[in-house]
Amino acid sequence: MRWFPRAVSSFRRGGEEVLPSPNIWYYQKAYEVENRAQDVDDDIWRVLAGYREWSGADVLDIGCGDGFHLPRFAATARSVVGIEPHEPLVRDARDRVAELRNVEVRQGRAQRLPLPDAAFDVVHARTAYFFGPGCEPGLREAERVLRPGGLMMIVDLDVASEPYGRWMRLDLPHYDPPGVEKFFARQGFDCRKVMTRWLFEDAAAMEAVLKIEFSAPVAAKAIAEVRRLNEVSSASGEKQVTLPVGYRVHTRTKPTGLVVPGHSVSSADAASGVASSASPRMP
Ligand SMILES: C[S@@+](CC[C@H](N)C(=O)[O-])C[C@H]1O[C@@H](n2cnc3c(N)ncnc32)[C@H](O)[C@@H]1O
Image (cartoon, helix red, strand yellow):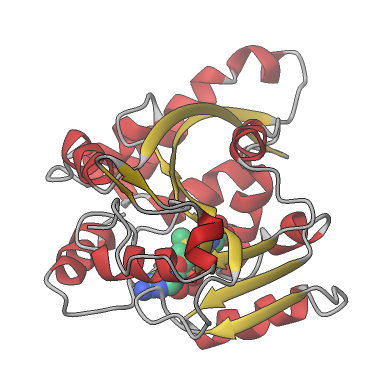
């Protein structure tokens, strides 16, 4: 995570629109191991589906990386589009979904989506730190491409959680979890915390992943803690390694009509032209 504070602050200044993601850009094999280890009990997926089932829906995944989550959506969605700025990952995401006829991957970025207005029912972004304080242009774009009543869901790691969040804070001393929460609340998002379990085949897989996520001293500390946490199971010959990891799920629904005191416009009215040009919850 040594790269993270520098990347986030330059992003906030508006300097770089694409946030460098060294974990997946340079250590893609270990990142695949990480993605496979994450949320093995489907805790996040259950929470997402509880907000908005995507069967038959049009889904957009922003910052889709090499497309790990696209097939999961595609299994029941009508269509899925993945957006990713980093060209090598765009190619790999396309390879991953080559057999899936309802999925398309496009090169692009959150702040300028190469997509038409009101084309999606669900916009998803996972561990996508370009959605955080300073990301208003990306949020406006997500709102633009959502249909009225559509849902935006942003999933990220809970920096306030134990133990993973504590390791993150060691590498990010200036990161302000309550400030980030306030930012999302001001933008009209609800936040739900979700505790999950990561499951690795063995200790070597766990170590490879923690080494791409943290600086060397913090990774060493995290690895030692996870080894201690798993002592009981390894003593009984169990090779697998588990790790509790907390996430936040931020959600915001695009209004179906303009609500002003004493008057409301439904989506049906809006479709017939009785609409306003502004969404009341937009920044
Ligand atoms: C940590 S990775 C997560 C990838 C994927 N969502 C997953 O869970 O496997 C973050 C991704 O966001 C992409 N990214 C960075 N800046 C972006 C931006 N401005 N708009 C869209 N994607 C961006 C990176 O290239 C990277 O693939």
